Length: 260
Image (cartoon, rainbow, N blue to C red; front, side, top):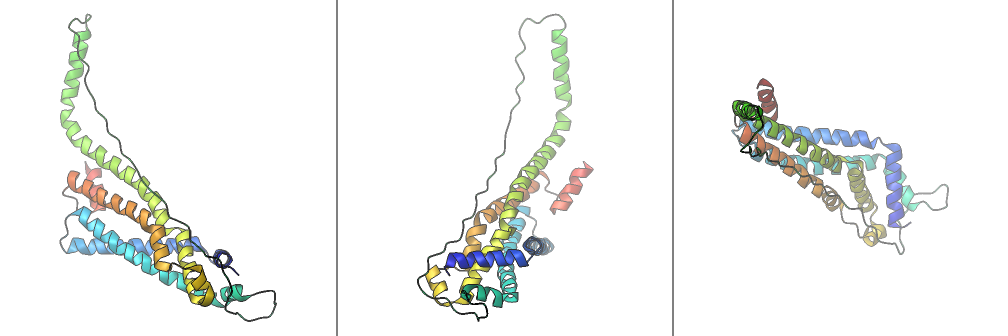
């Protein structure tokens, strides 16, 4: 059996026997809890800079994610180890025991990751020039409009920061949503499981397949989503620190915005 065929059978076996989406959801929840716990601990220790606190918490959460992927994949495979070992060694015989593969095998490569990006927007507002000669009543209308704009300056001082923070949060939330699927997707867990399975059977299949290792597979599939997520949380922390410097956390910032 070629390494490609072996990887396909391991993937198909795990998809058929396990609720992988549920497992990935639990991994994601535990990872988020680890990040929240780190952020809370840093806040208790006096870390006031939200962007720095969020960045450090994400780094810790990413390390926890790598550890959970490894442990979870090994646990999933260990429950069916006899089955996928027989998948590798099973030929046309019906009774049989699992045998180690050998012979000339093709090379196997895992799939790649994805790119995530987002963009913001800007705008300006210029008042039109008032012509020298205006029709009757037009001058009064323009003057009244200018008075309204001037009277709204005080409210705009409050509303503009709120609008910017909300806009930034929405834009970052959109990018973060795509990134989260890249970090906690089923394909990431399957890629790690396949690499662990290949390393477990050993022998010719591991050597000839040129397996990259579970950590390299996980890193390659999650690097860009992780980078996008890191940029999102750091930018969100910086925006909150600039516009709402009294906020000590994201829930606190939301309470302050509701109170305005």
